[in-house]
Length: 115
Image (cartoon, rainbow, N blue to C red; front, side, top):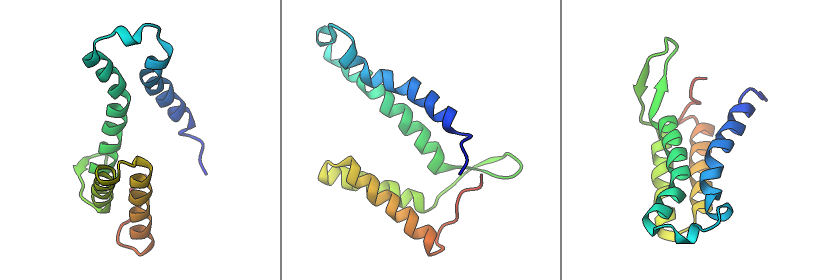
């Protein structure tokens, strides 16, 4: 197991978590306009969604060229969205999405992305 990306994970946490915690930590947040508060609470998830979208939709080949990619991960994302919309349970949606990708890779329907 490689620990090269631990620093990146800590940096991502340091950048995204404060936007989620601002409602708990800043005094007087209840006096902010509802629209501004909703915006601040959704900045972190929007950033994480953008990162995840690039991981699902874009592949880089050995020469460094990027290309649009359609694979089993799209099915996993669609299943996650459907379950979250239906059951209102993000954790269950994520479990199903991960299971779809794991099973697809285990039976050879999808390869690991190039590193």
